[in-house]
Image (tube, rainbow, N blue to C red; front, top):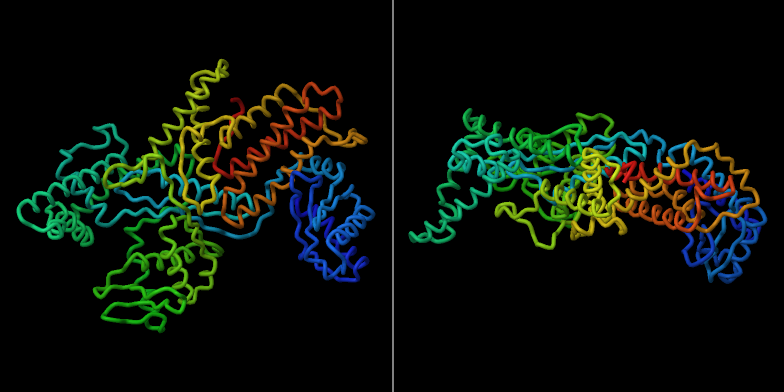
Length: 596
């Protein structure tokens, strides 16, 4: 990578400097390089405070001595300045021009293959309701991490677990049987997931009415909640489902089919997909044999007829893995599913679970259990934990039908994109179809970028209106800059092959250098995003790049530049910015328009 290449030039010189100046053998890996702060002149900064015992000097003399050595012995070091114990190094224009020459001939965000196979799990919807805002943060985070890992040279397998069984599914089924009068998604014009979700809400309404009636008849609230007839019907349906009752199974398959059709339409519009689906109706039977084997080997123990794991030594608690009646808990099937995945995909080196932070404890326990069972790959399991998303309207509740529906939210940001873009009045040469495609692209960019630019661990507030701002820290602002560059390149026509030698004797302008430095850091930022599984660093760096480019564009002429070599250089710089922005936005799951 380019950032590593610059360090590769500096580290050997620094090792020699320490040997000659201070008679000390320095390990280059111990040197900490930082980007120079904007208020100081320089490109790379070295903190010399850790080396004062070695030099036997104060911070300023130490930095001064190292700086003088580098200027005298390293071609790319042009000059330096010292601020207290910080050595700010200015890299020569020749280095930056050489970097651009090389960057123009390759994809600087294409990292070498790691040879590793990584699985990323995300989405994990329930088939009793449509996808909502919380799902969107999960989905966009998982999809972006998958693409970042792919760009960083990994083979990525994208999966989801569909929670398609349990009492919550049966509630929707019972409500439709009792209240549906045979209506279907087709007859009502509703998407299948919304149609089934409507009956989940209807169940809750009917259930509350029955509780009120039982309380009025003299039952206590606690008894009424347990004896409400519609709840008893749902519980009976679940028993029949588990007994493979053909009528219940047929109804279950029909209603789940409606939901899957709805999910697929949302996924397609959101621009995401999966390589494999896992269904809880199949995975819930997994893990029992593994738990029994763990009991036989002494990893787990039996108490009161149930099988337990003791994690108190790890600072956690005891956990039931198989109930007294032999039925499993969620942890049991998660144990079995993890084992199954590593069997299904030989050579799998990492498994990432994209799940909200309310499940932090669950995954700590899961990973400890799998390690106790002796699976070496347990150390490569990772919970990509993220905070919840709020709207100004407050907390979402599925049972009460107050969730922020994913489809409605996507449509809202697309409509807002339409209104904002149309108001600017720059779409005269777009036909209706092209406008529709553009509004969709801008709206989805606004939504995805807003959700991804925040550290996943943080709880966040989503503001649909703020996400569209064409002048703010938004996806559409980055799209607009990309389209601006593409327009510039179209106007330039066929570009001459750029020869950086023609700029000899011409100093880079600060605005040009600022853009080059942002480009130069991009591969390191991508690698860090892949290492930390955090798209926000890549999202924010992309914004910093386009900000630097916009300053450059406003301050310096490009097409009107009279000096031919400068014009060619600035066009090449613009082209590299566009290519890097497009790839970075691809990593975030965001498309960029050629015109806007």
